[in-house]
Image (tube, rainbow, N blue to C red):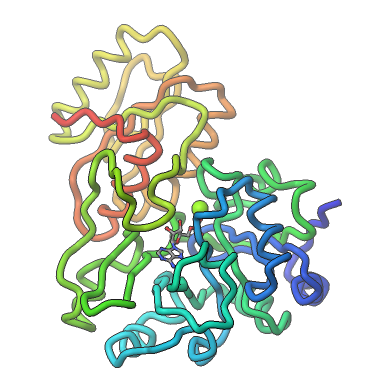
Length: 332
Ligand code: AMP
Ligand code: MG
C-alpha cells in the first residue's frame, strides 16, 4: 500500500529509500520517483512502477554537490564551473561514469546523468536517506510528467511505497540535460537553464538544442519513446499569432468532438470547449502538463496548441509540445 505523507514525516520515507524502497518526492521541475541508485533491485522497482523501458537511463539525484566525485569518473574544469554556477538547480549533467555505478541506472551506457535539485524537501529526503537517489519523473511511462500530488496519485498510487505531498514544481517541465562527457558540451534535452545561460559560463557549448522531426537515431536514449502524451490527440499550430488563430478557429467551427485549445497570449476562440491561455513561456512551461491532464479529465479528444517560435525556455516548451503531439505540427 502507498503511504501519502507530508514533509513532517520525511524520516520514514528516507528510511524506506535506505532500505531499498520507492519514494515519490517534489522537485522544482516535476515530481520524481526515487530509489537507491546504487542498488540494482531498487532501480528495477522504478522501471516496474513506471512501466518504463529499461534502455531509458535514469538521473541520479544528490543532495550535496561534492558527492559528484563519487559518481563521475572525471570532472573537467568547465564542468566544475557549471556545477558551481547551476547546482543546486534544474541542470542535469552527463559524465563518464565510475565503474561502481551499476548498469541498470545508466541503461548500460558508460555515462551517467546527475543532478542536484534545489527543492528543500528533495534535498532533505536525499540527505536523510544517506543514498544517491535515481529518480525519473513520477508518471506512468509516456504520460505527461506530474507537477501536483493529484497527478502522482492518479498514476502511481499502489505502485510505490511513499508519496510526499509537497509544494514545488514551479518550473513545471523537466531539467535541462547537458552532456559534458565529451570535448564539446551538448544539450540533449532543453529546459529552464538555457543555452545562453550555459554559454555565459563556458565556451565549450557551441549550439543550442534543435528539435528534429522524426529523429531516427536517438542521441539521447529517451528520445525514441513517446513522451508527455495525454490521451487526447495534440496538434501544434505554430507560426504567426494571427495566422495560427484563424487556422484553429476554422477547425473549431467544423469540429466534431470535444476540443481544447492551448492559446498563446490572450487569443479568444469561439466554439472551443475549453481554452487555456498562457501569457509567457515560463507560464506555458509551468502549466503545460497540468493543462494536458485536465483536458484528459474533461474527456477532450483533440487539443490545438498554439505556439510561436521563442528562445530561452521557449526552446524547451517547443520540445515538450512537439513530443506531446508526436510531432504533429502545422507550420503557418
Ligand atoms: P526523466 O528522468 O524521465 O526525466 O528522463 C531522464 C532522461 O535523461 C532520459 O530520458 C535520458 O534522455 C536522459 N539521460 C539519462 N542518463 C543519460 C545518459 N547517460 N546519457 C544520455 N542521456 C541520459
Ligand atoms: Mg520522464
